[in-house]
Image (cartoon, rainbow, N blue to C red; front, top):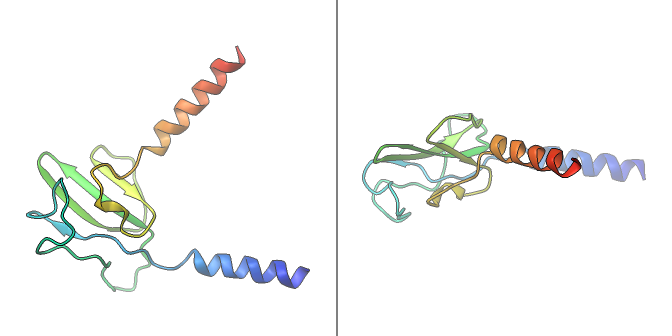
Length: 112
């Protein structure tokens, strides 16, 4: 039983370190609505010795960039997600901080 648990733990640690695939582009063909087959759009992260764990979408006015990242920072106009090719949508993810605050507020209000 102990060997089974150790094996499952090791497999989960290895699986968690595999790199993610993201759309990468900037400029023409990268905006919304997004066309993954547009010229200049790639669906793999650069192989530069970094294990990417996040897909990012950055919006600044009418300019959109999609890329790979190693972390997610709460900044206006930056959207993050953690599954393969997840940064191809119009809205990539909801702010986990905002969602956590809303859940905490709902919990506190429900107890009163």
